[in-house]
Length: 139
Image 1 (tube, rainbow, N blue to C red):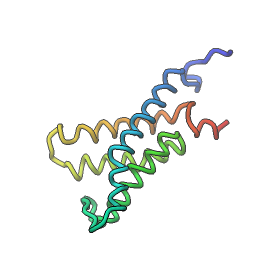
Image 2: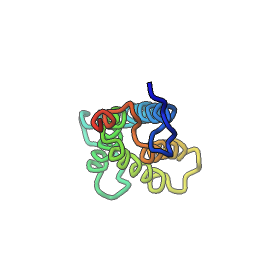
Image 3: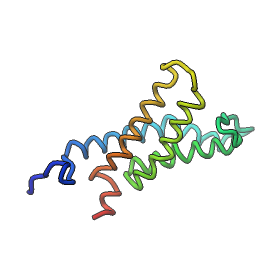
């Protein structure tokens, strides 16, 4: 077994791979199940769709964008597939929540979106780690 070198030489230590895995699975899983899945279920419900329209593109279009980001991109994130691309819509969604939906609200109202945003930005910079589909494809 070869010894892993430090990240200065381009090889990440095991702890960074584990951190990326935890951020992907926990952050993506919570986003998908707590936020994306309930929005996806709104599409299968009867009656008119009631959803916010923070960007002025219509309730239905806003819901579709939120489902794309919070459900589909989160699923890709969990798998570690197209990780850096998948976190971009998630980051944009969190920024809209922070600076449009909850603009001027107290910290208690923006705390969750801010924490998600930090997780997704960290994954944008770090990448998916070695335990991901992206890493398998790269081999």
